[in-house]
Amino acid sequence: MRKMRRVCFALVALFAAAAFAGPAAAEFPEKPIEFIIPFGAGDSADIEGRVLAQEMSKALGQPVVPINKEGGGGAITYTLVKNAKPDGYTVAWNSTSILTSTNIGNVPFDHDAFDHIGRVEYQPMPFAVRADAKWKTLKDFVEDCKKNPGKLKIANAGTGSTTHIAAVAITNAAGCNVIHLPVGVKRRNATVLSGEADAMVGPLTGVIKLAQAKKIRLLAIPSAKRNPLIKDVPTATELGYPAVIDLFRGLSVPKGTPADVKAKLYKAMETAANSQAFQDLSKKAGFTIDTMDAKEFQPYLDTMDKLVKDILKEAKLYRSKKPGQ
Image (cartoon, rainbow, N blue to C red; front, top):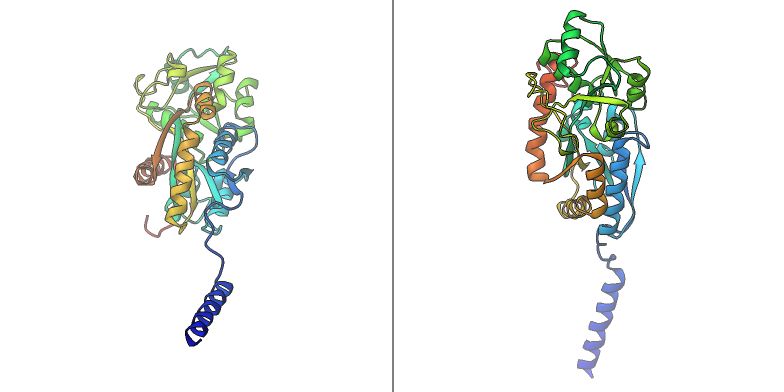
């Protein structure tokens, strides 16, 4: 009888412990993930991000919801994500803008204020003119620029933007003095087509359709090698103007996000990047899928950060956040 009572007490204790124990830790993800895009709906960053988010949703089994938070050259997105809860449910669709916005002073922090999941792709930023422009080559444009210093206008997405610093890199390498027009992403192409600007620099995904429709002419790209989609377009370095800077895109999350959550996000990102839908978009739009995990991406970001800093310093646009720099 005593033995039976002891068994009963043990069972009661077991059930009580179970009743008062908290619920088991949920497997990530258990709810939708916000996928924050730094630029407006319909532009190249948005289109690429939405396809990746859709494929990540399939891999994770939860919706990955694209949300556009444009402004400040990426500053609004990066500030929002930096201040978000580090639980994996807020992800930034980053780009080279995570280096430009932090170095031009649009935000009071550096790129290392985040945990980085990895890089997805990169792409060139062609230097383009209207199809009927008198400049057939970049050399033609540079020669005209040198004859008319401070008169030719090059459109970009905004002061300190990636397209701005790419234009600065090319014109500095060529010793060419121009006017840089910060007209915004939505107006950049239009200003060249209307004649308001003489040239522009834009991501390949943002200009390829105009080039294929023969409305603009691509004169060069500031890349290390030619792009297979536009294989007849030379690099600036080939032409004697050593300027190399590409646009990249990837994923970042708030600092302190758990390692297992970041690992799941990377696996989903990699799966999405290699999906048929994303590969098809890559071939059509001209970006190169080349995934990097966090261990590779962090040193890549550090190297790119130095490059961006150097270009901005030369253009007198760099804003240090640390005394004495």
